[in-house]
Image (spheres, rainbow, N blue to C red):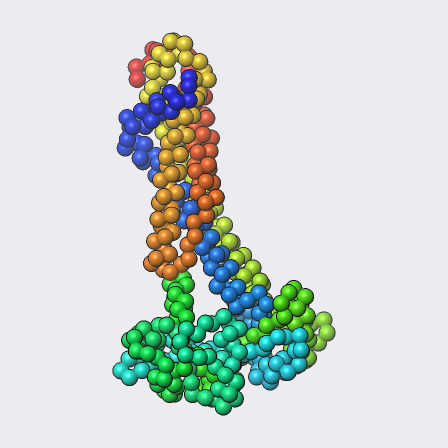
Length: 408
């Protein structure tokens, strides 16, 4: 039997039992859609990690009290017991780290912003040293950034994010306007570039003030995060991070052989940790979806066995007319493969739609991986063929005499 003819017969059989075929497809559709949606979201998250986190620069590293992300509550408690990173330690690194090209410090909290009759809550208040906006690749699209004089004199000046301009200033020119940050007046001198949403959370709801101004309001007891920029090249990063680690260990009196009482992270370290977490979550989700795929395959096998039973007389007639065992194998394998492949194609489309819907509603990054689309179709086809082998062999092994006596 030619493959085209087998494919045509398979489609006719599926079309003749439309409702049964649709219900059979559901298992494969759900499984493939789940896999495609998860892979699309994971791929988007990895792209976000590679672009957003690395935006601070491959040559920038940080020293902080605890890592940006912890994997257990036990670790979190351990890091909370560490001494805070003090301004004295920041100044020591700033003075003594000769291998560092630039050194800056950063603190943050949340608070309320008021402009005339408008206000916002849960706004991130950032305390920046003069070099920090540049080290975080924060582009100022209007006005200017901070100067060393602003930091030295604790100037009451502020940079604002796009949300503050759009929601509080309502399209007014922000430069020169006075806003109140937790009740303290600041003059806006610059507007940051719009960054959009990540995981449904706006990245533009922030106000930045000089670090010294920040500490006048919120105190100096909170831990600071020290940012350092190394000279370009891998050797420059190694030299700068090693020197910064030695300075910090000396300042904190860490004993030889003991682990650091602080966390030193490069952008590669952070990106690697996030990717590991994202991929682990994705692996679990894909494993669960794979179970659905197996269930879908079992359903296909069950329906194909029913189909063989219903068409026993047809099989007997075909064998009596000279159909070979191989012809019947191909026919039923083609039918189960076509069924699962159609389900896989619908699942691919559904998975992409779900992933894009999540991206739009929740602000979660999504990027379609072409390999996942091809893999979804191949896996769906493979499942159909695998679970169709037993029904196909059962049909091919039927005795034509017994089959012709069948009353079905």
